[in-house]
Image 1 (tube, rainbow, N blue to C red):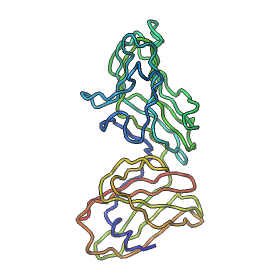
Image 2 (image 1 turned 180 degrees about the horizontal axis):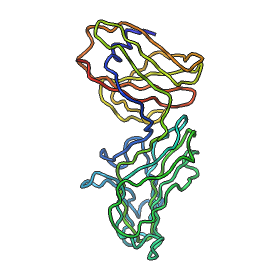
Image 3 (image 1 turned 120 degrees about the horizontal axis):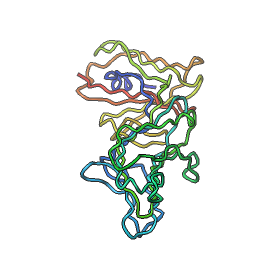
Image 4 (image 1 turned 90 degrees about the vertical axis):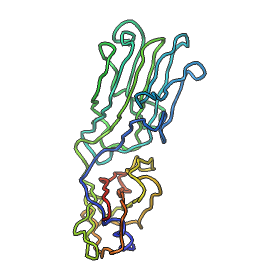
Length: 281
């Protein structure tokens, strides 16, 4: 590899590990980039739409259209190497009496997980809210899916002239964290820095990506990464038998002023490292 090129980007990095694998606030629209909208009543129900007032996803069963059955499907993500995974989101319910659990309708709001590209779904959460209202910070245990790759989240609305549902700030996070980390020490322009990767698959390939544009997120074959704009990658690195990589190189004086965003992926397990970003001063 060319260590000078790496440190020209990496000198600005500092941060702590994060096991967040999916984050979406729907501020860019519905469906967001990388997401799909499956409308099983197309032509009658508009399904999931953008709530321009709240900047969130919104679905309802419009009067007289029959049964609305619509799912927002996330990009593929991986829980390989993480544990104690949770899903959190903000929920608001309208016409809550028409949820099936409340007895006046057949409505269901569900969060579902697929591991086969959307062919089948497992319900991880079914809305049992007692009535209309705002329900922030909903939390769902996804630990049953720990260690699995090729997953997708489905936000599923179902109802026959029933409820309304708003969803925002969807986050899937491995609470146990990941041991696969990216770090850098000894940063000083014109000095020597050490870039370290730990917790990789022993003898496995590791790819490091970086961008000077923004923090993303961007959908990739490895899941959502915290890099945006033009993303560059360094030559593939190979972890030693302990799962570590160390790169020592001089830091060019000419670097800056920029902000660089970087993240690594363990190609063997599909696990993403922490993402790090700092301005070059």
